[in-house]
Image (cartoon, rainbow, N blue to C red):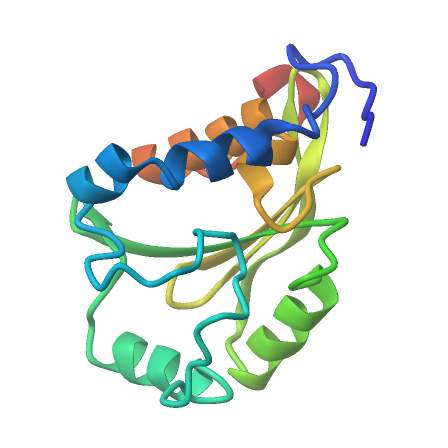
Length: 174
């Protein structure tokens, strides 16, 4: 997938997951990660169909409600609590429309309405902040595994989140 932009990285290397696959299937890497300790006869693969999870709920929304209601937060900095949910805007595995639909079911009031955020004077994606400091952010031109598609935008997103700063809402502040 080629994606031309003014960003520092001009395109996604379609072979990057091949390198990850080869690396994570090396015996010394699996030993260091304490992975595949059962020595199953299958190689690691993203989104593998080998293991069939039977004990996971069809939705995590009740769990998310419980976590938010009990004050447990994903990240804490300077006594502020924040959540972030990030989606690539061209992801087919978990599309942004599905994420927005799920968040709508939480019935959280919107604190900051849907707005474009910027990196290197171009739109990096869109964001919306809900009461409870849950932030939904999209990354323009990214699929399901955001950093493999748009590394600079993914890095900008996580830097702003960890610093407790909102994503830049104008091209001059990126």
